[in-house]
Amino acid sequence: MGWKETAEPVLTRMPAVQRPEGHIPFKRKLTWTAGVLLLYFFLTNVFLYGANQSADIFGQFRSLLAGGQGTVLHLGIGPIVTASIVLQLLGGADLLGLDTSDPRDQVLYQGLQKLLVVVMICLTGLPMVFIGGFLPANEAVAQSLGIGMLGVKWLIFAQIFVGGILVLFMDEIVSKWGVGSGIGLFIVAGVSQRLIGGLISPQGIGSSVGIIPQWIAVITGSASNVPSLLTSSGIQYLLFGGGQLLALATTILIFVIVVYAESVRVEIPLSHARVKGARGRFPVKLIYASVLPMILVRALQANIQFLGRILNRQLGSGMPTWLGTYSQNGYPTGGLFYYFAPIHSPNDWMWWAGGVGGHAAWQVLLRVAIDLGFMVVGGAIFAIFWVETADMGPESTAKQIQNSGMQIPGFRQNTGVIEKVMERYIPQVTVLGGALVGLLAVLANMLGTIGGTSGTSLLLAVSITYKLYEEIAEEQLMEMHPMMREMFGG
Image 1 (tube, rainbow, N blue to C red):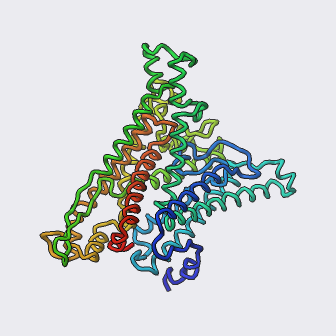
Image 2 (image 1 turned 90 degrees about the vertical axis):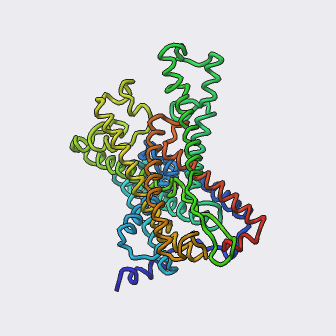
Image 3 (image 1 turned 180 degrees about the horizontal axis):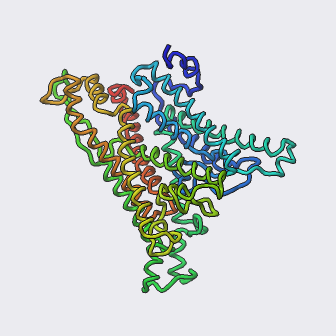
């Protein structure tokens, strides 16, 4: 008996959101999407009862993980992404033996994903509460409830666990009843908050005031500690300091590049085998695998840094220096964990400005090279896994074209022939697009962005918003012309 037969009774009984029967009107989809988004914002403001606030363990990864520090959604989409990484690796190595085109295997795959998410919630939340002490229990709450500190810790974990499950089902509701995906929606919501705050917030995000209030203060002369703008220190202030001109230019440039890259494509002509004159095109976009594989790469880096902080908390001064040394704020300052830490801002690599903690130039350059290599190579690898597991590879695409009755003009109507044509474009474009996205993410972090948003988060937000716009336009077209919905199997 194989593992599928053994696990089937459990996996098929995993709770799931029921799929809608028939067509859902566009307005109802928007209603479901807006309702889930409001619930997400509400939950990110519900703080954990019995927990003292402390430094955010995920730090700069917070906007990417789409959660709220010290709230019910403390873990955000982290467990879902980590479970996806495990499934990607198992599926890429063909260890699961699941055919996602088979309805039975689809149910097993979805059940396995939910089970892994539950496991990841426990593997992430338990060390955070009981071992690392990153969510310390409140002694006053323990005394008032009479359950002791251990009981309060279990209470904190229970809230985190419920939050992780809620994120899982909110994502499923949006995917089945709304527009786009829940994960993408939560990322866009978190990034948009930071971007708007970085533009207009009078208090600013962190220690930085929003660009617009800061420039108003500079122009009116009410800003303090502003050097003469004609000096070298003034130019540095405009580019990297309160002026944030470089961050503004980088943010705009990322928007333009991603939108342009989404429109760059190779269009393979198609014609219907039976209906004369019926023609179409199959687009192979430059970012064929989308920007979503970047979540997997950054989540892997976040888990590595999470492991480093756990070890630092447990070993303290007994931790080998070659493995990692940490500051009082919990950030790596040396060892392997320092070199594997991503670049988050210009201060992390501009050694001549004195903001790199006294590290030598070669150490900073080595860290930049590792981060760049990790993102470029990891982006390409995870893009390949993503394409294969999402049925976007040459073989799956050839079957879809064949089943739709289309063919490539000048070639025989044969799945193998269509697959060979697709192999000329899809693998190369997938690797190139994944590497390009990784490169853009690192460069955006190095130059800085508005509101301290990470480059990966900004790339994801722009790409997801662009795809959401395309999906909304398609939904509106289907609403206006019901016959088209029937043609496309809606």
